[in-house]
Image (cartoon, rainbow, N blue to C red; front, side):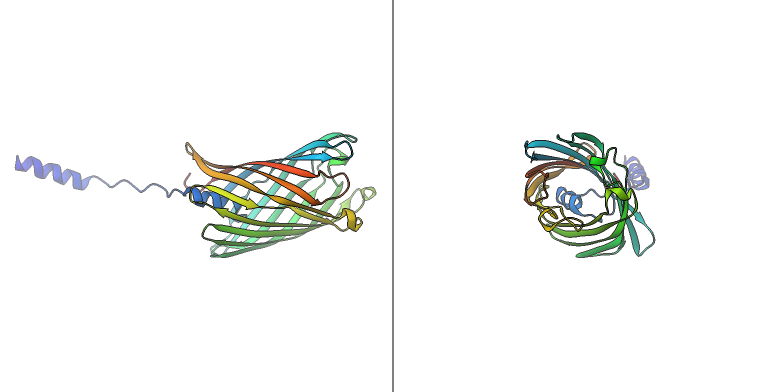
Length: 265
């Protein structure tokens, strides 16, 4: 009997210990990752933005945007973040149009090892890919892009800005000279629920001051969670346009689903 017990004990000691499984992000960490423009893994957000009370007839229009984050490690010190943006839109009468808008891509060079503050800088390019004149600028444009991110505990706050200026294309369409400013404040709970304010503001330098600003103000709520083996978040929000050019919607509603692909998943 004793020899059998010793043999079983020896066999148990020779059995290799299973390798630890990849670390799993908590729901709060996933929620923070939803907002971080410089996250170190692939994200694919898909957002539908519906504009209401457009023009004198108070019509509604819609745009669906896909803007994945594609991170690339250049070396031990630097990462390159690529953010292509593709939008399919519907614009109501009097010039009813539907189709592709101009394709846009931004590149950010950012330090690999960061703590509370994260920064990135690089170029942004806009290509005249719109399927109709009502949905695009008809011009090739480029300019600088800068972002600064603060992450501490449940907070993730950021500001992204860029300046697009046209340099080629159909000169009859007029020039492009537009500033984009996106401040963001988010609070992320341990449960994966979060609240944020993420207005996307623009200033058009080619028009009169009364029509230059687009300033939305509102809030979003959402939740990051796991669905089987998949990590994702769902988000809804509404924004009133405090300043807007003629023909722009008076308010917008946003619905967003983000697919998250952390390392090891």
